[in-house]
Length: 568
Image (cartoon, rainbow, N blue to C red):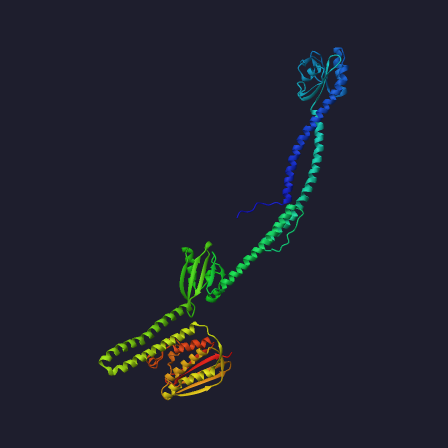
């Protein structure tokens, strides 16, 4: 940026303009005044010479020999050059030059006019003196022409005196003008300085500045314009600030992290979600982690196009989807999304479809195989038809149970639970009564310790969870074993415990038994009619009620499942 020229104040500029104008006017005025004064003085001298010439013209001696003496006498008296010219143009007397050497004056303007009876005048360079002179000639009674003359330089002395007086007056007026201009400059500069300070304050952000008013209309209008500009600027800034806050709220509400990198790799903006995903946001790109984001920003700048990259970050590892888009001025927008849960859900969905397909395939294949065998047995071995029919029925029931469990799981995951007051103790008693026949058939003792408790939740869902746990406890307990059901309130939680003396669960499988389709012993599970979805539904129901489910088990000694529900 070029250095600004040396600046001056308005008072200084007014003084300079005034001085230049004053000098020019002084020169013009002096020229015109001197010219006018010179002309006026010459006219005055000419008028005086005319009066003197008319006065002495009638006293010219008639004798030629006496004319020179008379000329010298009159010249000393009137202090002017006196010349007497005969009617024929001969010079008969001159107060300065030698008349005998002078040429005939016929043809001179003033002489010719006088011979014609008029007052003759002329201003020209004198051949005798070599200076410009003023001539006046009149005709006397004797017929001689009397001419009086004075050099124009005599007028110049009076003009010089007048010029000196004029210069003093002009100098005095100039000094007075300087004082007036300086005062006016300061008076004009004072409100301008105030307006400049007000404009600077507005530029610095002080929009409440008091703009001074002025008695000068133009300055007052300028002040009003600055005040209006401050008001309008304040309104615009308020709108921009409101839009910025709105945009900040919107960006902070987005689950994706947003990062704006400047041309100098400084961080211009980062929303709250970015800090949640990547941790504290630094001030420069060089400190952003993972470092792969830094590489992507530079690559987007060099290639000039958007990039979409997935990467892992943190411990435990999370999957991040990073979108990098170059903007104008070498700025780059980075959008970071945590897609770990989405990927997990997609994987769970794929696993669920695979497992469901596999689980459905087994009973369907069994039904088809048994049906085909049944067709052959009808013709060749009628006595075995009941056996194959029983297999078809068994496989169909397994398929029905699987479809029913899938529908129950879908229902649990897709609908919003409606809460109501549920008599949990009565619900548990109902489910215990439902498994009593199967337990009695196998000689399994059911021991119940149920306290009266009420919870807020969904009765059908809670019944489904209790039913699955009781059913599993009875199915996986050997004949003659024991299943204990306990319901009580512990501190601020309501606890349901279902313990059995069954086969137990290996320690390595305890963390996975609540996964869909997971079975500890596939062969035993299928032989007991299990689908691998019961415990998954139990966990879903309990967590939907704000509770938690846990298990303790020892292989060969039994298992204990505990449901803890919050007290409302």
